[in-house]
Length: 233
Image (cartoon, rainbow, N blue to C red; front, side):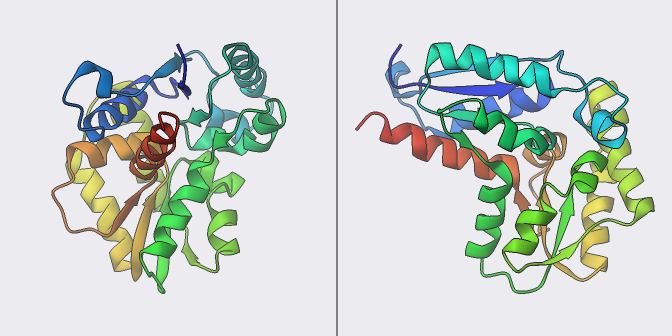
């Protein structure tokens, strides 16, 4: 196969399925050959990224991810898409292990916020690991954004939705999702970055609302399609 890219997913699997669904849907193919060429790594057994960030005594996901990169080096895709937000904590290590460019989801999401003309406070919602590691906060502050991070009680609700409702029970709790989004508006936020693919999964299924969401996964889908289409020219 020529002119293809690779997707490093499986963290989690249902969220990766959501990414693939959006990717294929947005291509607007009219025949088989209109779809994009890609290889999917659904590496479900990668240790939990947040667990390691919060406690480095836990198993380190990086060796698993570096093994994935080594395998992709053999395949030689044109670029690599990393679909897990929290795994971007290891982005520099992964990029250093390959000459193949990796798309950077936090950078793309922040750029989308800037292009929207936002001048007010911007919330970041993601895993506790992403918040602690500052994966998005660093990009947001570097771009001059006024950052809102969820207080403890709100982060607990976000984590419950991600881990208990979606990952553990495959349950899409829209009531809790909208309660979380409303909390950002109540805090005076102008935009809300969804920086977790489980939250993106919620957004895919419950997008019929007026909350000012910037869905990082959705942005990554668009950038992936844009980059992949240049391979065919």
